[in-house]
Length: 189
Image 1 (cartoon, rainbow, N blue to C red):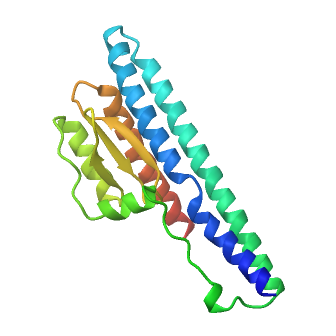
Image 2 (image 1 turned 90 degrees about the vertical axis):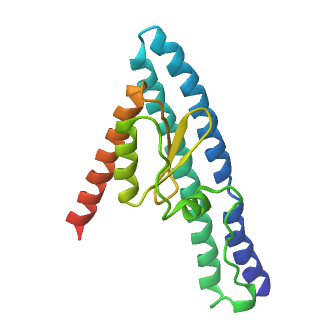
């Protein structure tokens, strides 16, 4: 029977090794590529392409994050089912998953309570302040970019230069989405 508890504990422990950091790194790399593409397309008057690519990037990262969360839930459900079949797990074999180094949850915890970074764009600063007032966090990244993290670790990268109106529009849309989700949540209660 202790073998079952060991398997259940091992299953729980595997959730800490799910590749969440890979999604964060992929998002950062895609953000840098998007910034370079934005600069190239802005000079050729094709900014709408940048918005389309940004949407694809957000969808890809959100899908990957949702997939990992689903795998984690399935692993934990299987561990719980194994434990339930054989009674409660002794406390000696219970292990809490540890955060993966570089995971988005840890980043959010590190930045929580800190003011948003100041950037040169007045509108960008305004939206960053409003977003952080709603429980999100922000940090300044390389190459004139700002990364905004949601309370569940979701991340969005925006250009912080005032000439990039596409980023200002995306920040405004993100703020609207946050407000819409908060309204939906409060309506459900």
